[in-house]
Image 1: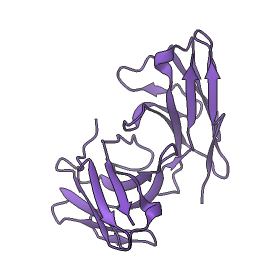
Image 2: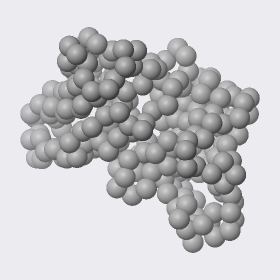
Image 3: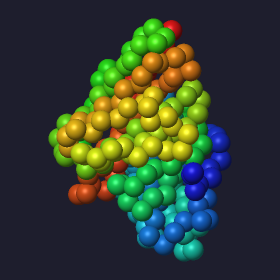
Length: 110
Length: 115
């Protein structure tokens, strides 16, 4: 079963930062937080992952709270192409099962 | 980056027939492959985990005799939906994992419609 909870939907104005929260209060010490997104009728696309430190790549930033019970994915300048369902997943590593929660449907508004 | 392909991308079949879906890792050797099913407006549901050369591990509630998984090589896994019925119509997605990568790579999915 999924160990994460996310708001079902969010809107964001184009060009503004999109902040997507995720709760994972039962995360284990050796579990990573992974973020993926799925554009309609496509396979999920990897965005970023982290263990306890904040992470940044060319797509997004990941902020993990000190107690690791929640995290926030930040898309710094949302574009219309960022409209998708975003999933937060916790897992020991990529060779272990990924249990998807309901995700957050992000709509970027022109 | 690593690429995972699926074939076919869509298939329509008659009730009672069997359908095979292929999942290939194109430029890396996948130690583990996963199969998911996704119904409209729902999240991905993990069906099974397969490791090369060994039997797949099915999630609770997934019928192993109905969804046959074969992982014969480090680059190919197949899912066969046997005696398909309309309720098996869904979007089937595979993913692959390798020890030297930090992500699971997902295929583009296969849309199955059973008439």
